[in-house]
Length: 330
Ligand code: CP
Ligand code: NVA
Image (cartoon, rainbow, N blue to C red; front, side, top):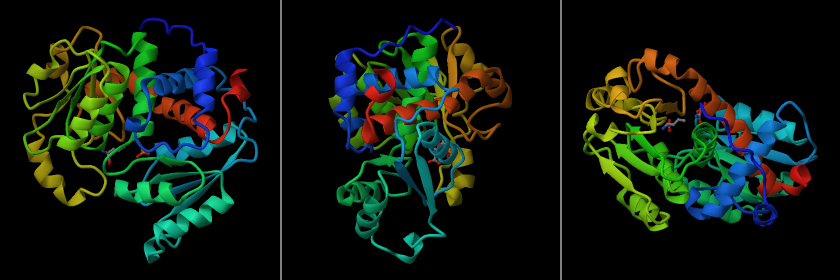
């Protein structure tokens, strides 16, 4: 592992981040390459101070809505805002009025009067867009069927820390063309990282999202979809995978386990990649399905750093949207 470059925020980055106050964080498509670079730099600064608490979000409240399960997202947001001096209120579908059909627009307007920010994990991305439309406080996407932008911010931070830079690196994602694949396409587009999505025919990312990501792509950035598992991996700097059946696709699990059988990160696949290739997984992992146990354990440092980085990346996002980065960096 190469040493991380020193992370310093320039005054221009600080001004840029300060201007994010009040914005939503729904998809990387909505953020400029400079804003994403600034958020990653701020996350690095916050990571360095991880043992300390600070009061940058003193008295700020975050509502966290979950209509899908979570371990990392729930704990990292709740612990994260506490570290910044604020607190979180967790709302699940079963113990709130969500499952009883309260309109999203009403929930948005009510919560906006109680809290300073809303994080939501749910199914339809359009529900999160509606929540953001009616909220007067920032809305953060904690995963939808289409996107997982907080996860890719942690992924970018992990790659940047270990490889020193993102531009020009080649990430190969093996698996379903799902919310992670979509988010990684935007992550590549905005940072200049080449992204190959290697998936079975019929399980490719949305062509509209690919088109948008290609439109967003920094000059020289290659985004591609391939279906040939081993060949796609040649020279990769980062291999990435995710579950074959996402939350909400439980009934397709059996069919998917057959369709995806060849789309696994194992020693044979790893042997085709660049020497010292990183392996990342957003977790939870299913050993023996999308990744073998030996590969996961051999790359556990990277994968659990990646999980830790959820905390730092999200704290940077919350700080920029709900507070001011000057509070910790100035
Ligand atoms: N990676 C991720 O979002 O994990 P959780 O589902 O546990 O939140
Ligand atoms: N694609 C997975 C990601 C889990 C973090 C899912 O949506 O279930």
